[in-house]
Image 1 (cartoon, rainbow, N blue to C red):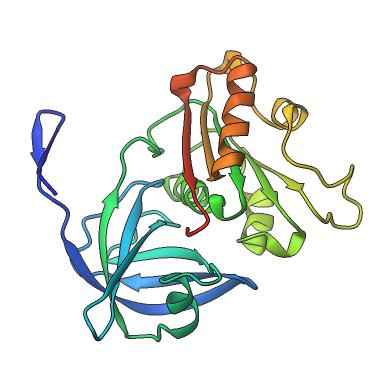
Image 2: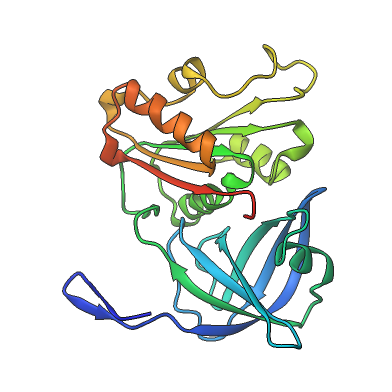
Length: 253
């Protein structure tokens, strides 16, 4: 990787750091949050991600990118990993990696899909599945900074059992003033939920998002098809393209 000019300065190439697992927390049957200790971590912005690299005894290496799940916390970072069947990295992280064991991380990466607590424009977060991870980092950073910026989160999942951060989101929706959370279900909805399971559509974004005239910042994260659909809906509703920020992931996560 070569050095890149950023804002008139030359940024040094990102190097690999040795991180160790401190703690894990089960979020869903297929997702876990991993707390890592990373000495000399330089800090990060909510929305950024890291690369995680594993090295086998024979020297074979595999790396994947994972969004940071929380705001800055000294030398510790959180990653929420969705286990991918037949994956090279996620099964190791969720099923094999033990407390104290090392992996290599590189980051933070990304400068466009980020939210800064100093920003005051309304924020719309639209998540599909594990795409909620970087958006949750923004929700947590908002609370940590004491920000009053109004947030709205639309979170689409297959079933209630697939909601990552379910308990925390329940509490935050109740206690974090200015945060509204709306769930959409594509396969199975909980008892008492209005409507039938469906994929995100125009009515969902129009009803639970912000009007375009308020010029909100919109962050959309999830599988490619989901992200493209939501971005098109937002632009169709009059949102400025430059204010619709997207991040997508493929089947290998």
